[in-house]
Length: 309
Image 1 (tube, rainbow, N blue to C red):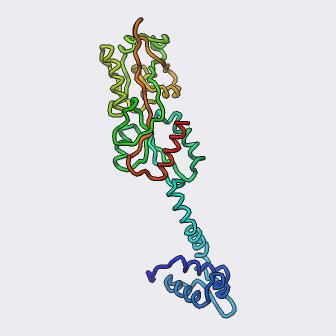
Image 2 (image 1 turned 45 degrees about the vertical axis):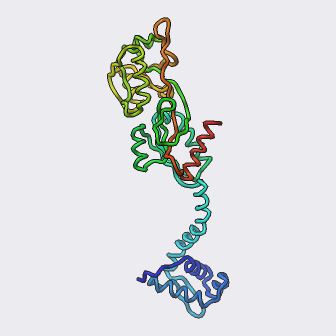
Image 3 (image 1 turned 30 degrees about the vertical axis):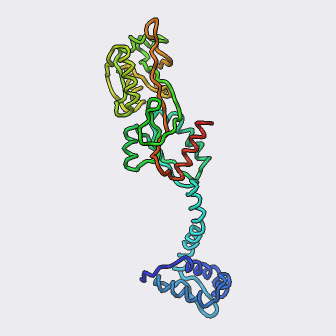
């Protein structure tokens, strides 16, 4: 078979002849004379190595090969006709994809609400979601595997080198086993809480927040007794329910209604005179600096409007 290229004009000529089943009418439809159309079809058959039309002086009919090609050619030409509009839509961020990673706490409220609203706002942009901790997200950014991420950190402590949009701030709360004596106290004394075994996420996951929790213990003049580390917030809560220890978790985690766990929000009493200020958590949408792909820019603008509105 010849490797000669077949351009769109030739396919348009084939379509005209196939639909008109008459070379003269096909030429008229294409605003051409008949000989170039006849020559184009002969050349197409030569390149393909098959007959596309049976023709006599009185009739033109498609061969089985021509019949098989007809729907494919229609689809090809329709797709080609739509390419300019698709290119303009892609440049405007109206079509494309955004690969979004998110920490588990964002998955309780922000991600479901944004996915639902963004599908209405920009139906041509696909959101590809992957749950990942902050350290995993940074590695994925370095490999070019994600476009944006929702990360957890203390206020203003987002990883450097990334563009950032703060989307939520929340306090830490205390998670206690339901059967623990302190669970029956609305505001347990700080000294009692800090003496309990601690379930916490590894520092590499959220360094700033881990350090803030450790600073709470240091400010009270004691060292944390880490009983167990766990990566996912749901796992931490499950360990608390199992009586492994207490945990400090972002307030949004309280939406994870796990039997066997109670949460204590607000400031924890530190004896009769002073109160311990619990760390705050900030969730940020982050993405690589520099030129931003149109679909990602559209998503960032969407999130910014939701946060500010």
